[in-house]
Structures are given as structure tokens and as C-alpha cells.
Length: 61
Ligand SMILES: [Zn+2]
Image 1 (cartoon, rainbow, N blue to C red):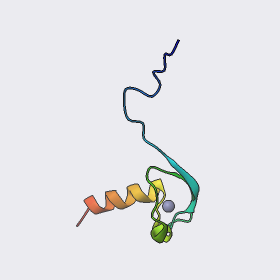
Image 2 (cartoon, protein in one colour; image 1 turned 60 degrees about the vertical axis):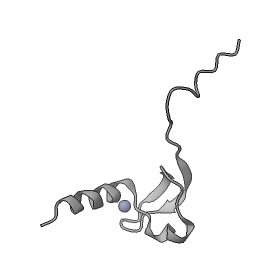
Image 3 (cartoon, rainbow, N blue to C red; image 1 turned 180 degrees about the vertical axis):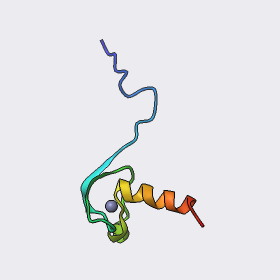
């Protein structure tokens, strides 16, 4: 029996694990949905700050 359906049907988002820090609030970041650029490690944002940033961009006055 070679039923191996687990890798089929869709794209699973790969998470990159590591030990980083948010440049804004200082929270620990252990997972990212993309591979961080080593030269930009000091600009990483945690999920919350990332979302805030996106929201504040829309809320342009
Ligand atoms: Zn943060």
C-alpha cells in the first residue's frame, strides 16, 4: 500500500524556524512565513507589528 496523500492537494505554507527579535516591540519571533534576509534581520517585525504597519498604511490621513 502506497497511499501517500499527505503531500498532495495544495500548497502548504512553509514556515521558517529561527530565533529572531522584532525590531519594533522586541518580541521573540520563532517562525516566519518567509526566509528572512540575513542583512535585514534587524528590521524584522513580529506578526502584530506587521499587521499594525499594514493597517496604519491604510489609515492614511
Ligand atoms: Zn513586534
